[in-house]
Image (cartoon, rainbow, N blue to C red):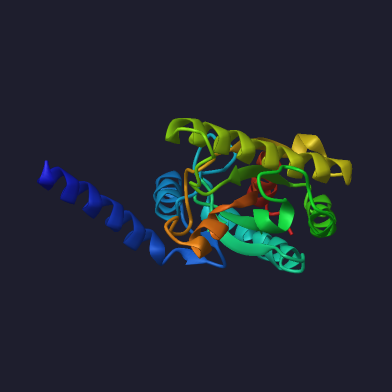
Length: 232
């Protein structure tokens, strides 16, 4: 069993090393191994993988064009107040943009009603999304592992999952009310306590784990444009 674990780890490291030199401006350069690399990176980062379902590998040139395009999207998102913006890799090994909002900024404690300051930030963010209609969107809500008064651990986890979903839906509803096309939003999910990005044993860590993440990733149309060489 130990040998098998070491073998699996070695294979994962080999994929990362062989593909590492193929990264440029957030894009995976080269064909083959893209989906596997995206899955490995997703698990290491603790994020749920996002990405359009594609029939085959995306070529080096198309991957580079998508990377450059997502660099522009990232720069636009960085101008949004209270937004933490990162360039990540989707399930196809392609460049994507992750925008995180602290739930303390978005919502009152234990609530899914948006605060006014959150509406200001999300209005700015909606303008970014409307300028990038060729990007698909995934919205994900998360909580810390704080228990609810009078509830068992299992009940608390269920309540946290429900709250995270309601918060993700509140963000989605506000964005669509600002003119973001609902068809652009491919998923809106609540993951509760899962996928923490920080240590839940500290107050600071819990605060980081209470969040809503929005992913912008390559749609089928964007991938097709990149393969045709027309993506700007």
